[in-house]
Length: 375
Picture 1 (cartoon, rainbow, N blue to C red):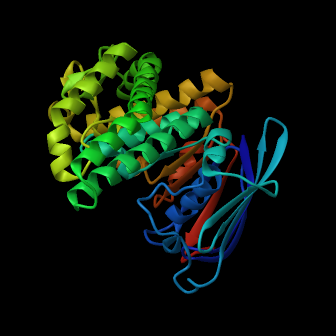
Picture 2 (cartoon, rainbow, N blue to C red):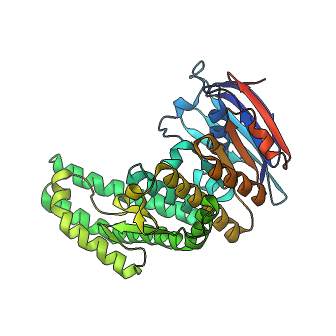
């Protein structure tokens, strides 16, 4: 799968830009603040329907000089001999078209897989549990449109449950009505919560071998061992069966019901679970250096790429936003060697003008970015 060309109009600091890409390595070079990450964001938006930044307002994606106008992103993409034109229009809402047919975000995710490496992603172990859950959920949606639907269905059920609890707290309905509504909702809420949890657990199991191979490759150490705990209520359920996960969630719901009724918020479910990475049997949050923590997440992403190739027969696109500068020479060398081996299209940003020489084996294009222009 390759993006052959792209066009941006009124996006971030780009008033208008058209680019033709190499089918292997594309490097965007420039000082900080010139628009390199904005280009990667546009590519990710075109293939996933969303930004990899923490963004809720569509208007933040538009050019600051022309917020009232529509933003337009276009790309021509080839996948397994088929041609696709993807168009995204950002106005009051986001409109996505593939070959002139309106589609949903989950369609892009499932059909045009793209994986991002960024400085923020390398800090996931130090971040809160929400970022680790997001790491797993993004991997799930990349593998299946059904996974995306499952996650969306659970979010809707969770939103409904939170509204019921909030209405009680704000005295908009009596306790008796609240309990009846919760009992009725739990017929769908609990199975969805269990299915999300089991999907995450199954994926982590699938990734285990490639994850260990990747960390050993990146650290150049065959003695390193990586494992992952899926934590529900402070207990590891990585090896639990579906009925055990169901029991754990139901038990926790009974324990926290009073707290939920008083706070007006759901305190049980996959949105509260955690993923703990173990490095040689130790919790990486407390026993690993920053370099080791980054190597773990880098290895997770590499394992995700290899898992996708085994499942579908081709590699996802890779976006690397100034990641190499965050790595020491050993990890940097390992990552570049890996990029040479997998033979997929890569988009990479850097401030280092010497970096393209490290990719001399591959056909590549180098774009110099300055103030939203190719110079």
